[in-house]
Image (tube, rainbow, N blue to C red):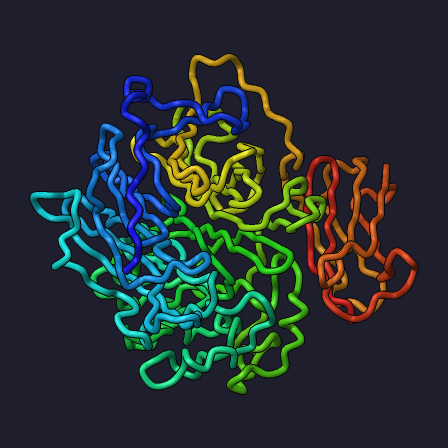
Length: 563
């Protein structure tokens, strides 16, 4: 039985001081923005997710398997809404997903995702479960346990394997058509290159199918729930006929896969207004996904269409992951999932590259530059009507360990137009969501155990921008010709700002800068040539390289294959 820890309430003697939100000290943001503790009387132990109900109450899920209720007056209900017993809290695992039905007022379901430990002991042989439950009719702050329904993972063979202390289940989010998205990591080991064969107790009769004993390469298989985002019917847990790999069987793994090739899509969101249609003709919307990386990179990807492959474990961030690229056989002998094109080119190593990425230690290699990241928290669209234009209706994404939140402006085609620094010195942002009543940004601080609100003070003086280490991103189109190449390669930029200085960095397969070229006033205007040599003048070996160009406050990049 898991020890239960009740929410810690601030002392009653301070109650009169806590009738209104208090500023959060230490968080830096643009002038005019205020960061405050949205519910000063509510503080929790290891909170990881929250959901705002239509009537203003808030559900807060804690990692240890307890869901609390914050009342409309900001107080915390003494008795939890739900307590889950058959759960592991090892490492980063536990109750990590929480969502409520979009028509909650007439169809009040609460959805949760957590990791199950079927064989208590020192091993990490876990699997994941998604279930739903209704509140009691006459006590809406308590779950009606008779309504609990498992959608995924009722038994071990039916749930995604989670075989280490991290990158298991992530967020639950509803599509604009009412379908339910479920994010799940690859469930592999992070201490070494995991090709499978490390967890014999997790596979076999009444356990995970032995065909899934392929380690991180589960993220490249549409016959696995691991390493991607699923789309299911929230009533049954079945796949939907409009899913990209629908095979006629709603219970099959493939029929529930929406996109794959992700290591740990811990948090993501659906872009408002991006879905259309109903039934089999429905499109649930565009997914904005933060994917937590392994050794070197964090990344942000956009799933604009079903069936996209984001590259893990063959790629990490913008570059090939050499340790997985060098694997020649999985533990099962399955070669279809390896980092080549697969039989008849059916499984390319990378279909869709990341839109933004952050280096773990060198902020100059990140895109946008100036920020490093070590645990990206996929964010959400937010911004109230009174917010300045550069922040209103932007996408906000953060990093849990390095404590920042960026505002990302995108156009109607989901192309990144500009990034702005937004908040720094944020303590442990683990979930970002809009306030449905105001549009203000809410974020959950696991470190402080609080939900914070970011709002704009309309009475403040004119807004000026804070210092931005990225310089902001204005995207710069870069193409390489010829590509692949065995000699010189010409990098062609957009034709504007012909006289602006620029810097070209060539990165090797591991992310190390191997060549830097600076030009103050290029006579060629828009053409840059790399002769295929490193900083010592030596010809680089065959492989995949990465060209990153900065020019006149704009940045762009492209991949180059050297033969």
